[in-house]
Length: 56
Image (tube, rainbow, N blue to C red):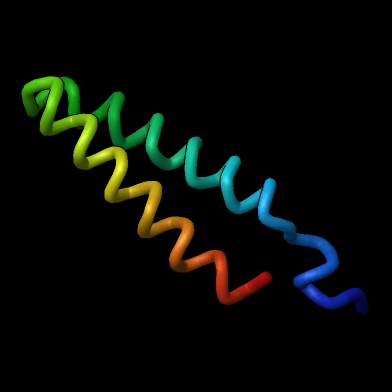
């Protein structure tokens, strides 16, 4: 079985962070002003990155 670090690289982490940020922004823009939705999306991307980075 290959190690997870050989399967998941930084590009994958960045891509998932962008996907999470886009989804959170799309949901947040309905309930928050633009600045709040952008801030929430940035925090979600950082959270996704911090969860996935120990895996690499």
